[in-house]
Image 1 (spheres, rainbow, N blue to C red):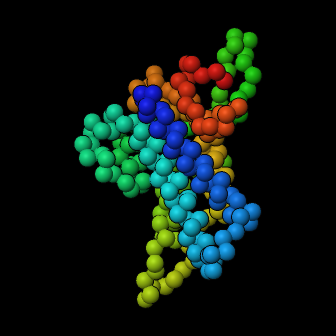
Image 2 (cartoon, rainbow, N blue to C red):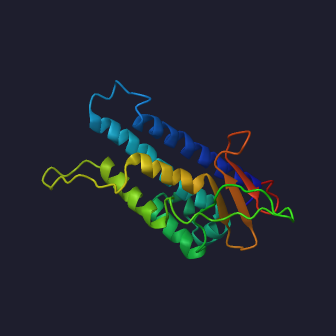
Image 3 (tube, rainbow, N blue to C red):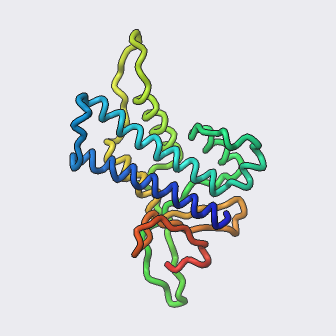
Length: 204
């Protein structure tokens, strides 16, 4: 992943962060939209923010795997469906999905920081597809002749946001070349900005 692509990757993370922070505020009723005179308007607005955040995660994976993906799919610039995008990327790089890492710990006696992968508490690939499709269902007008069943999200919106944050707070990107790894901060200490670092160069 070239420096320009790293910058683009981080820009997408900043977009995700802005959208999800807004959703957090809405859920906590810290912000209100008096223009939304119907509750379903607010539901639509929240669904859009979450769906676009998931799309941005998918496109971030595309950015990280651009070289191998563009070589396989010449029309890759027209790809937009997050579900199929992840499926196609995984076919080329089985380890493409962000790997969430635990909190930074102090270096060992050799000055090495051993990061541990999170086991749970984050949105995994299967949940990603589940939530992506549920958000899409919320955004579509229902057929007036169908049975209008309530969309079951499995978790409250606040918990989904937390699971997405847990995925991205500190994560590893594994490129197809297994020797190339990046550690990415959702909010880098001191700057609060999304920052991607080569694993061997990361000042953790």
